[in-house]
Length: 112
Image (spheres, helix red, strand yellow):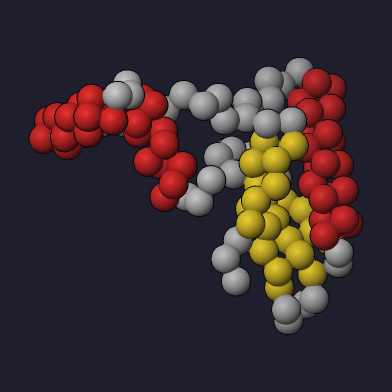
């Protein structure tokens, strides 16, 4: 099964179903701190995800730690000059900035 995603307070998590145990489970992406959650139904899974994020943020505040921020939308890519040039040509031909063009292409690849 292809994983799906959930989002809450800007944090993104993958969701999968484990048919052996009969549960949905998920983990928050892009963080050094591991945050996971589970539920027997999609609603229980969503509730546990929200509770896990809220607990993480509260725990950080109570212990004086800065929580890891959710994805900001900024991404730096290091490309070879030929690829960079090809992107400039494709973006110009489409009447877009390279950032707009690349964002659209990446969104298509990940199905968004």
